[in-house]
Image 1 (cartoon, rainbow, N blue to C red):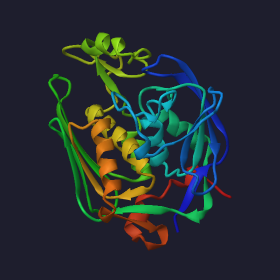
Image 2 (cartoon, rainbow, N blue to C red):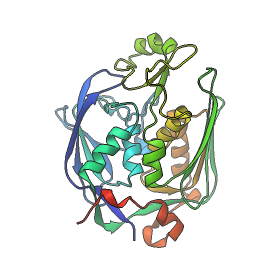
Image 3 (cartoon, rainbow, N blue to C red):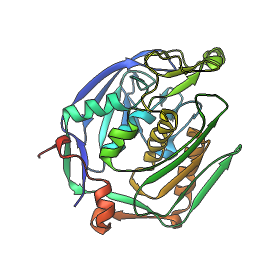
Image 4 (tube, rainbow, N blue to C red):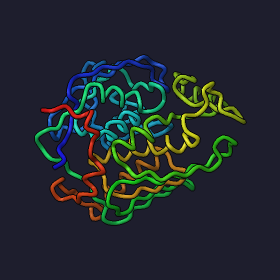
Length: 305
């Protein structure tokens, strides 16, 4: 049986928001079964609780924001991706600012933190979202679809008119260990020619070579280069996992994306939720052994109850 999971103890981390440029502290707190992933803005007087759900997504320009107005948290996708990558269903995330810290631009810092404090099974089995019918969304020449499959896989294609990227495509079949090894270290990236424009729009104020891959017109500017030859499309997969995890369940379905971003990913999630005939929520006791293996954790991160 696959049980719901939470973290084994409280953990804290401090960092800079890539868009706000503000220093922020996160405090991850264990939660009970069926609590879900919920942020709390502890810097605000009314300390609002903000569920990490697809239908609670607001702005999607260069990041995924949940909530609205002052009761919002920006750039949640890397942390949510890490939680999904390790099968964590329930945690309260206390944050004293408007944006999740970017760390090194990937999700590996969160993976290290979560593995260090450990993961604990709860006394209730997981529910899974099993895709039964294809769902497709398109916007501005970009598209994403999901279709039935035995477990979660993501096939992503990105296209940039830059000699270091061009066209990159990758298919990733999800399991926890592969996520950690193949996806979690892939960093976000940006183009120097866009920096002035982004900063005028209140974005990228905290961006640096320490937390993003930077490209001029011809090459990667980071001294140590890339972590993977196709790091750009791997990061797209990391983002996609973070965005579709906002459906609130672990997923059995094949996701295919073309030139997509946070906006298209959220359109796909919302369309799935608006068409309940396209999916079925199943308890862990009902899924196949192949699906079960996809969501098993490495034994070194599970803490006995």
